[in-house]
Each structure stands twice: as structure tokens, then as C-alpha cells.
Image (cartoon, rainbow, N blue to C red; front, top):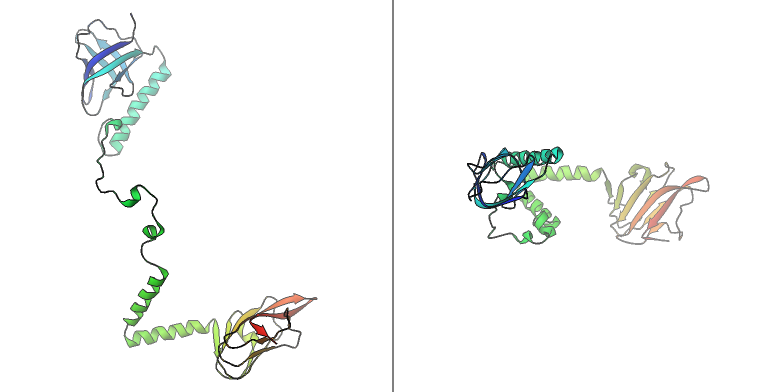
Length: 267
């Protein structure tokens, strides 16, 4: 007689270690080291059987929804202690996982999920950039900032303007008239000229990599002057006209430092 037994109907209730055999199987035997599969679920270790009351005793009580009149298969594994221990550990771990997630004791495989009746569009595709970041854009941020500024009273706006002017002066200096400008006073900053008359920028000795930028907003042409040769690929050392942008930097050439100018220049 094969030690593998098929039971067409068994019942197993929550927190019980007794598997009730519902059919008239009274001549079965339980080989030490047997496991039972109920309704295709994972194996559970069986320690003994009662042929009079037609029950099987599990090593660990079952926890979960009651199993009513399901088929089961009893399979002997022999004295494979390592395998039996692994099955027992699996049962303990699965029960612990269900309890840890707040579902109470139960079979994780039997947890049911509700159908989402109105899923978001991103349930079946990657979200777009706007969906991730929201509707705010750089332009909207500026609009909001301006609106916030306009909502302030005069005293607050005047204070903000003063603060802005102070910040501006740290990186740019505006010259409104014809003048001679010392470049050393504007290293790492910007010179803005608004004069309609000619302007001269003196490029005196400065440390290597010193630099500044210049914007001619007026009509007055800006001329760069230096006691040394000014380096430029085309030999230009004047701004080309109104709204011209130029840049000057100290570089090393022929063993000496020189100002090199470039940008929207002319001769």
C-alpha cells in the first residue's frame, strides 16, 4: 500500500492543529516525517494521525480562514530533518508576516484585494513631467513673485528696492557720464556704461586670471587702454557700438601677464 494518501474532503479551522477527514478513511497510517497539502496550499508538517476519529495533527496550529471540505494529499518525506525544519520555519515566518502587517493571523495567500474602480491615468503608464512637478513653471514663479511685490505697501516696496540696489552694486557698477575707469576697481564684477560720450577703461597690472565684463548701454564707445600690449585675435580694443558686450581677462603670454579682451569689439 502506498504511503501517499488522497483525501477528497478535509476541514481545518483557525487556531487548530487538527485536520478533520470528512470521508470514511479509517485505515490510513501516518509515516513519521509526513506533510500534508490542503487545497494546493504550501505543505504543513504532520506529527500523528488518529484513525478512530479520522484526524491528523499538525506540528504548528493552522491560523487563517477556516478551510471547509477541501481536498488534501498526505505525503511521507521520511526522516529528512532539514526539509521538515525548513517547512516548519516557513509556516512560522508566514504567520508572523501576516500578524506584522496588521491583518492578524492568517494565510498570506488568501488576502483579498479590492478592485480600484476609478484608477488614476498613471496607473497604466509613466507620469509626465508636469504630473510629477505640478503646474508651477519658471514663468509662473515670476508672475507670483511680481504679484506678491505689487501687493506690498510703498514702505515695503521701497525697502525691497533698496535691498535690490545694494545687491546689484556688489556685482555691477553703472557709469552714466564720460569718464576714465580703473579696471582694478571692478575685478570679478561688471561695468555698465550709459554715457553717450566716449569712455576709457584703463587696464593696469593685475594678478593672473583677474577678469571683468562690460556692457555698453549708451552710445559712447568704450576704449580699452593699457601700458602693455592688449591681446586680441583681430587687434580690436574698442566696443563695436551700443549694446556691445565685452570681456577682459589677465592671461600669461611670452613669460608676462597681459590683458586679453574679446567679445563684440572693433578697431
